[in-house]
Amino acid sequence: MRPVGLFVFPLLLLAAGAMSCHNAGEADPGGAAVIFDTDMGNDVDDALALDMLYKYMDEGKIDLKAIVLNKEGLAGPEFLDIMGTWYGYPDIPVGIIRDGAGCVADSTAYTRRIADMKTEDGLPLFGRTHSGYDACPESVDLYRKTLSEARDTSVVIVSVGFLTNLARLLGSEADGYSDLCGKDLVSRKVKAVYAMAGSVSDTAHHEYNVVGDILSAQKVFAEWPTPIIISPFELGMQVCYPASSIENDFGWTGSHPVVEAYKLFGQMPYDNPCWDLTAVLAAVENVPEYFSVSPSGRISVTDAGATLFEEGGGNRAYLFMTPEQAAAVKSRLISLVTRPVGHK
Ligand SMILES: [Ca+2]
Image (cartoon, rainbow, N blue to C red; front, side):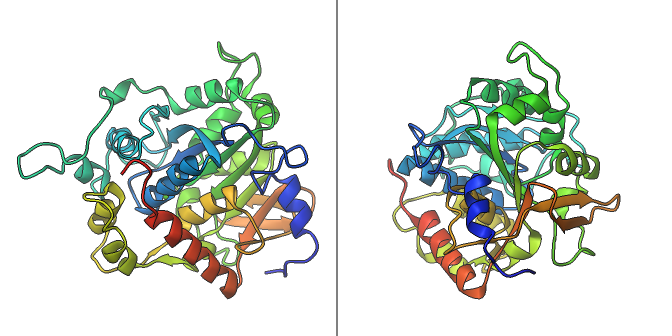
Protein backbone atom coordinates (compact mmCIF):
# COMPACT_ATOMS: atom_id res chain seq x y z
CA MET A 1 0.00 0.00 0.00
CA ARG A 2 1.11 3.54 -0.66
CA PRO A 3 2.04 5.89 2.15
CA VAL A 4 -0.34 8.66 3.04
CA GLY A 5 1.32 11.33 0.93
CA LEU A 6 -0.01 14.76 0.20
CA PHE A 7 -3.18 13.59 -1.51
CA VAL A 8 -4.94 12.65 1.67
CA PHE A 9 -6.24 15.96 2.86
CA PRO A 10 -7.50 17.27 -0.50
CA LEU A 11 -9.28 13.96 -1.01
CA LEU A 12 -10.83 14.18 2.41
CA LEU A 13 -12.39 17.49 1.50
CA LEU A 14 -13.22 16.85 -2.13
CA ALA A 15 -14.60 13.37 -1.56
CA ALA A 16 -16.85 14.51 1.24
CA GLY A 17 -14.76 12.94 3.93
CA ALA A 18 -15.53 15.12 6.90
CA MET A 19 -19.29 15.35 7.01
CA SER A 20 -19.21 18.56 8.96
CA CYS A 21 -17.50 20.18 6.00
CA HIS A 22 -19.44 21.48 3.08
CA ASN A 23 -19.38 24.96 1.68
CA ALA A 24 -16.36 25.95 3.70
CA GLY A 25 -17.50 24.48 6.97
CA GLU A 26 -21.19 25.26 6.91
CA ALA A 27 -22.98 22.57 8.94
CA ASP A 28 -26.13 20.82 7.77
CA PRO A 29 -29.05 21.76 10.02
CA GLY A 30 -29.86 18.64 12.01
CA GLY A 31 -26.74 16.87 10.85
CA ALA A 32 -25.49 15.57 7.53
CA ALA A 33 -27.92 13.45 5.52
CA VAL A 34 -27.11 9.72 5.57
CA ILE A 35 -28.68 6.65 3.96
CA PHE A 36 -27.65 3.28 5.42
CA ASP A 37 -27.69 0.38 2.91
CA THR A 38 -27.34 -2.89 4.82
CA ASP A 39 -27.57 -6.66 4.52
CA MET A 40 -28.60 -6.78 8.17
CA GLY A 41 -28.67 -10.35 9.35
CA ASN A 42 -25.70 -12.32 8.11
CA ASP A 43 -23.06 -10.69 10.31
CA VAL A 44 -23.48 -8.82 13.56
CA ASP A 45 -21.26 -5.95 12.39
CA ASP A 46 -24.26 -4.41 10.63
CA ALA A 47 -26.06 -4.17 13.99
CA LEU A 48 -23.06 -2.54 15.63
CA ALA A 49 -22.75 -0.15 12.67
CA LEU A 50 -26.39 0.87 13.06
CA ASP A 51 -25.83 1.42 16.77
CA MET A 52 -23.13 3.93 15.82
CA LEU A 53 -25.48 5.77 13.47
CA TYR A 54 -28.08 6.15 16.24
CA LYS A 55 -25.35 7.49 18.55
CA TYR A 56 -24.41 10.05 15.89
CA MET A 57 -28.11 10.94 15.70
CA ASP A 58 -28.06 11.51 19.46
CA GLU A 59 -25.11 13.88 18.95
CA GLY A 60 -26.81 15.75 16.11
CA LYS A 61 -23.93 14.85 13.80
CA ILE A 62 -26.06 13.12 11.20
CA ASP A 63 -29.64 12.98 10.01
CA LEU A 64 -30.31 9.31 9.19
CA LYS A 65 -32.81 9.75 6.36
CA ALA A 66 -33.45 6.10 5.48
CA ILE A 67 -32.32 2.53 6.04
CA VAL A 68 -32.49 0.29 2.98
CA LEU A 69 -32.01 -3.46 3.04
CA ASN A 70 -30.10 -5.22 0.27
CA LYS A 71 -30.96 -8.65 1.68
CA GLU A 72 -34.30 -10.33 1.24
CA GLY A 73 -36.64 -11.49 3.96
CA LEU A 74 -38.85 -9.97 6.63
CA ALA A 75 -36.64 -10.64 9.65
CA GLY A 76 -34.50 -7.71 8.52
CA PRO A 77 -37.19 -5.01 8.63
CA GLU A 78 -38.59 -6.44 11.87
CA PHE A 79 -35.15 -6.29 13.47
CA LEU A 80 -34.75 -2.72 12.19
CA ASP A 81 -38.08 -1.85 13.80
CA ILE A 82 -36.86 -3.34 17.08
CA MET A 83 -33.66 -1.33 16.81
CA GLY A 84 -35.38 1.94 15.94
CA THR A 85 -37.90 1.48 18.73
CA TRP A 86 -35.22 0.65 21.29
CA TYR A 87 -32.96 3.54 20.34
CA GLY A 88 -35.81 6.05 20.10
CA TYR A 89 -35.82 6.49 16.32
CA PRO A 90 -38.80 4.38 15.26
CA ASP A 91 -39.89 6.45 12.28
CA ILE A 92 -36.81 6.40 10.08
CA PRO A 93 -38.12 4.92 6.81
CA VAL A 94 -37.06 1.36 5.93
CA GLY A 95 -36.84 -0.09 2.44
CA ILE A 96 -36.84 -3.78 1.56
CA ILE A 97 -35.53 -5.59 -1.49
CA ARG A 98 -37.34 -8.12 -3.61
CA ASP A 99 -35.64 -10.45 -6.09
CA GLY A 100 -32.28 -9.52 -4.67
CA ALA A 101 -29.32 -11.35 -6.11
CA GLY A 102 -27.33 -13.58 -3.83
CA CYS A 103 -29.69 -13.14 -0.89
CA VAL A 104 -31.15 -15.81 1.32
CA ALA A 105 -34.81 -15.72 2.18
CA ASP A 106 -34.39 -15.19 5.88
CA SER A 107 -31.76 -15.20 8.56
CA THR A 108 -31.35 -17.37 11.59
CA ALA A 109 -28.03 -15.83 12.58
CA TYR A 110 -29.65 -13.29 14.90
CA THR A 111 -32.39 -11.12 13.36
CA ARG A 112 -35.17 -13.72 13.57
CA ARG A 113 -33.94 -15.00 16.91
CA ILE A 114 -33.93 -11.49 18.41
CA ALA A 115 -37.45 -10.95 17.10
CA ASP A 116 -38.54 -14.22 18.71
CA MET A 117 -37.01 -13.53 22.15
CA LYS A 118 -39.57 -13.52 24.96
CA THR A 119 -39.75 -12.35 28.55
CA GLU A 120 -40.38 -14.83 31.37
CA ASP A 121 -44.07 -13.97 30.91
CA GLY A 122 -43.99 -15.00 27.27
CA LEU A 123 -44.22 -11.46 25.93
CA PRO A 124 -41.90 -10.09 23.22
CA LEU A 125 -38.63 -9.10 24.88
CA PHE A 126 -38.17 -6.14 22.54
CA GLY A 127 -40.89 -3.72 21.52
CA ARG A 128 -41.93 -2.81 18.01
CA THR A 129 -43.51 0.31 16.59
CA HIS A 130 -44.71 -1.05 13.27
CA SER A 131 -46.11 -4.22 11.70
CA GLY A 132 -46.82 -5.51 8.22
CA TYR A 133 -43.20 -5.32 7.12
CA ASP A 134 -43.93 -6.69 3.66
CA ALA A 135 -45.60 -3.34 2.96
CA CYS A 136 -42.30 -1.47 3.32
CA PRO A 137 -41.32 0.36 0.13
CA GLU A 138 -38.88 -1.17 -2.29
CA SER A 139 -35.38 0.04 -1.40
CA VAL A 140 -34.83 1.68 -4.79
CA ASP A 141 -38.10 3.58 -4.49
CA LEU A 142 -37.11 4.80 -1.02
CA TYR A 143 -33.73 5.85 -2.40
CA ARG A 144 -35.40 7.89 -5.14
CA LYS A 145 -37.88 9.50 -2.74
CA THR A 146 -35.19 10.34 -0.18
CA LEU A 147 -32.75 11.72 -2.73
CA SER A 148 -35.40 13.77 -4.51
CA GLU A 149 -36.21 15.51 -1.21
CA ALA A 150 -32.59 16.17 -0.28
CA ARG A 151 -30.50 19.25 -0.82
CA ASP A 152 -28.14 18.97 -3.78
CA THR A 153 -24.80 17.25 -3.09
CA SER A 154 -25.78 16.58 0.50
CA VAL A 155 -26.36 12.84 0.92
CA VAL A 156 -23.73 10.40 2.11
CA ILE A 157 -24.52 6.73 1.51
CA VAL A 158 -23.02 4.11 3.80
CA SER A 159 -23.15 0.78 1.95
CA VAL A 160 -22.28 -2.28 4.03
CA GLY A 161 -23.73 -5.12 2.00
CA PHE A 162 -24.46 -6.15 -1.56
CA LEU A 163 -24.42 -3.32 -4.13
CA THR A 164 -27.72 -4.39 -5.68
CA ASN A 165 -29.71 -1.36 -4.55
CA LEU A 166 -27.08 1.08 -5.79
CA ALA A 167 -26.94 -0.62 -9.19
CA ARG A 168 -30.73 -0.57 -9.47
CA LEU A 169 -30.77 3.08 -8.44
CA LEU A 170 -28.28 3.90 -11.21
CA GLY A 171 -30.50 2.15 -13.72
CA SER A 172 -33.79 3.60 -12.49
CA GLU A 173 -36.02 5.74 -14.66
CA ALA A 174 -37.76 9.04 -13.96
CA ASP A 175 -40.80 8.57 -11.75
CA GLY A 176 -43.23 10.43 -9.55
CA TYR A 177 -40.42 11.44 -7.21
CA SER A 178 -38.06 12.93 -9.76
CA ASP A 179 -37.84 13.68 -13.45
CA LEU A 180 -34.20 12.63 -13.33
CA CYS A 181 -32.96 9.19 -14.25
CA GLY A 182 -31.10 7.36 -11.51
CA LYS A 183 -27.60 8.35 -12.58
CA ASP A 184 -28.51 12.02 -12.86
CA LEU A 185 -30.36 11.94 -9.52
CA VAL A 186 -27.28 10.45 -7.86
CA SER A 187 -25.02 12.96 -9.54
CA ARG A 188 -27.11 15.83 -8.25
CA LYS A 189 -27.85 14.66 -4.71
CA VAL A 190 -25.16 12.26 -3.50
CA LYS A 191 -22.00 13.64 -1.99
CA ALA A 192 -20.16 10.34 -1.64
CA VAL A 193 -20.52 6.63 -0.95
CA TYR A 194 -18.61 4.93 1.84
CA ALA A 195 -18.72 1.22 1.15
CA MET A 196 -17.46 -1.80 3.03
CA ALA A 197 -16.52 -3.76 -0.06
CA GLY A 198 -13.66 -5.49 -1.76
CA SER A 199 -10.11 -6.37 -0.94
CA VAL A 200 -7.28 -4.19 -2.20
CA SER A 201 -4.16 -5.74 -0.74
CA ASP A 202 -5.14 -9.31 -1.66
CA THR A 203 -6.76 -9.45 -5.08
CA ALA A 204 -7.12 -13.22 -4.73
CA HIS A 205 -9.65 -12.56 -1.96
CA HIS A 206 -13.12 -12.15 -3.44
CA GLU A 207 -14.96 -10.22 -0.79
CA TYR A 208 -18.47 -11.24 0.31
CA ASN A 209 -20.29 -7.99 -0.44
CA VAL A 210 -18.89 -8.04 -3.98
CA VAL A 211 -19.31 -11.71 -4.83
CA GLY A 212 -22.89 -11.64 -3.51
CA ASP A 213 -23.84 -9.62 -6.59
CA ILE A 214 -20.87 -9.24 -8.92
CA LEU A 215 -22.80 -7.67 -11.80
CA SER A 216 -24.10 -4.91 -9.53
CA ALA A 217 -20.64 -4.30 -8.07
CA GLN A 218 -19.19 -4.04 -11.57
CA LYS A 219 -21.86 -1.55 -12.60
CA VAL A 220 -21.56 0.61 -9.49
CA PHE A 221 -17.77 0.89 -9.53
CA ALA A 222 -17.78 1.56 -13.28
CA GLU A 223 -20.67 4.02 -13.54
CA TRP A 224 -21.36 5.69 -10.17
CA PRO A 225 -20.84 9.41 -10.82
CA THR A 226 -19.75 10.62 -7.37
CA PRO A 227 -16.82 9.54 -5.17
CA ILE A 228 -16.75 6.05 -3.66
CA ILE A 229 -14.42 5.40 -0.74
CA ILE A 230 -14.15 1.76 0.24
CA SER A 231 -13.29 0.23 3.57
CA PRO A 232 -11.78 -3.00 2.28
CA PHE A 233 -11.89 -6.42 3.92
CA GLU A 234 -8.37 -6.16 5.29
CA LEU A 235 -9.10 -2.89 7.07
CA GLY A 236 -12.00 -4.34 9.04
CA MET A 237 -9.77 -7.25 10.00
CA GLN A 238 -7.36 -4.83 11.68
CA VAL A 239 -9.90 -3.91 14.36
CA CYS A 240 -11.93 -6.48 16.23
CA TYR A 241 -14.66 -5.62 18.70
CA PRO A 242 -13.72 -7.18 22.06
CA ALA A 243 -16.00 -9.74 23.65
CA SER A 244 -14.94 -8.33 27.01
CA SER A 245 -16.75 -5.10 26.14
CA ILE A 246 -19.93 -6.97 25.24
CA GLU A 247 -19.72 -8.82 28.55
CA ASN A 248 -18.81 -5.90 30.82
CA ASP A 249 -19.76 -2.49 29.41
CA PHE A 250 -23.55 -2.56 29.25
CA GLY A 251 -24.54 -2.55 32.89
CA TRP A 252 -26.38 0.71 32.24
CA THR A 253 -29.30 -1.13 30.62
CA GLY A 254 -31.27 -4.36 30.73
CA SER A 255 -31.84 -6.31 27.54
CA HIS A 256 -29.97 -4.67 24.67
CA PRO A 257 -30.75 -5.83 21.12
CA VAL A 258 -27.18 -5.47 19.84
CA VAL A 259 -25.63 -7.12 22.87
CA GLU A 260 -28.08 -10.00 22.57
CA ALA A 261 -27.45 -10.21 18.81
CA TYR A 262 -23.70 -10.35 19.40
CA LYS A 263 -24.11 -13.19 21.89
CA LEU A 264 -26.34 -15.11 19.45
CA PHE A 265 -24.19 -14.58 16.38
CA GLY A 266 -21.06 -16.38 17.61
CA GLN A 267 -19.83 -18.57 20.41
CA MET A 268 -18.83 -16.20 23.21
CA PRO A 269 -16.26 -15.00 23.90
CA TYR A 270 -15.21 -13.94 20.40
CA ASP A 271 -13.86 -10.71 18.93
CA ASN A 272 -15.69 -9.85 15.71
CA PRO A 273 -13.97 -7.89 12.90
CA CYS A 274 -15.26 -4.33 12.52
CA TRP A 275 -15.90 -4.32 8.78
CA ASP A 276 -19.12 -2.31 8.68
CA LEU A 277 -18.24 -0.19 11.71
CA THR A 278 -15.19 1.22 9.98
CA ALA A 279 -17.28 2.27 6.99
CA VAL A 280 -19.64 4.19 9.28
CA LEU A 281 -16.79 5.76 11.23
CA ALA A 282 -15.09 6.89 8.03
CA ALA A 283 -18.31 8.33 6.63
CA VAL A 284 -18.87 10.46 9.72
CA GLU A 285 -15.40 10.96 11.19
CA ASN A 286 -12.89 10.55 8.40
CA VAL A 287 -9.98 12.19 10.18
CA PRO A 288 -6.24 11.45 9.91
CA GLU A 289 -6.21 10.18 13.48
CA TYR A 290 -8.32 7.21 12.31
CA PHE A 291 -7.77 6.62 8.60
CA SER A 292 -5.41 7.17 5.72
CA VAL A 293 -6.91 7.53 2.26
CA SER A 294 -5.30 6.32 -0.94
CA PRO A 295 -4.78 8.60 -3.90
CA SER A 296 -7.86 8.75 -6.07
CA GLY A 297 -8.21 6.30 -8.92
CA ARG A 298 -10.44 3.65 -10.41
CA ILE A 299 -11.80 0.40 -9.04
CA SER A 300 -12.85 -2.41 -11.33
CA VAL A 301 -14.43 -5.73 -10.44
CA THR A 302 -13.48 -8.90 -12.31
CA ASP A 303 -16.03 -11.50 -13.34
CA ALA A 304 -14.78 -13.65 -10.47
CA GLY A 305 -15.30 -10.86 -7.92
CA ALA A 306 -11.80 -9.47 -7.38
CA THR A 307 -11.54 -5.72 -6.83
CA LEU A 308 -8.68 -4.02 -8.64
CA PHE A 309 -7.54 -0.49 -7.76
CA GLU A 310 -5.68 1.61 -10.31
CA GLU A 311 -4.36 5.01 -9.33
CA GLY A 312 -5.45 8.01 -11.39
CA GLY A 313 -8.33 8.78 -13.69
CA GLY A 314 -11.20 8.35 -11.27
CA ASN A 315 -12.88 9.32 -8.02
CA ARG A 316 -12.52 6.06 -6.14
CA ALA A 317 -10.27 5.58 -3.14
CA TYR A 318 -9.66 3.10 -0.37
CA LEU A 319 -8.96 3.47 3.31
CA PHE A 320 -6.00 2.01 5.13
CA MET A 321 -4.64 2.25 8.67
CA THR A 322 -1.38 2.14 10.55
CA PRO A 323 -1.36 0.09 13.76
CA GLU A 324 -1.59 3.36 15.68
CA GLN A 325 -4.65 4.42 13.71
CA ALA A 326 -6.21 1.00 14.22
CA ALA A 327 -5.75 1.37 17.97
CA ALA A 328 -7.39 4.80 17.88
CA VAL A 329 -10.27 3.44 15.80
CA LYS A 330 -10.82 0.57 18.21
CA SER A 331 -10.92 2.94 21.16
CA ARG A 332 -13.39 5.24 19.39
CA LEU A 333 -15.67 2.37 18.34
CA ILE A 334 -15.83 1.00 21.88
CA SER A 335 -16.55 4.43 23.33
CA LEU A 336 -19.42 4.96 20.87
CA VAL A 337 -21.00 1.52 21.11
CA THR A 338 -20.89 1.37 24.90
CA ARG A 339 -22.22 4.89 25.42
CA PRO A 340 -25.65 4.87 27.02
CA VAL A 341 -28.56 5.75 24.77
CA GLY A 342 -30.21 9.03 25.58
CA HIS A 343 -33.60 7.74 26.61
CA LYS A 344 -32.43 4.63 28.47
CA1 LIG B 1 -22.92 -6.09 6.24
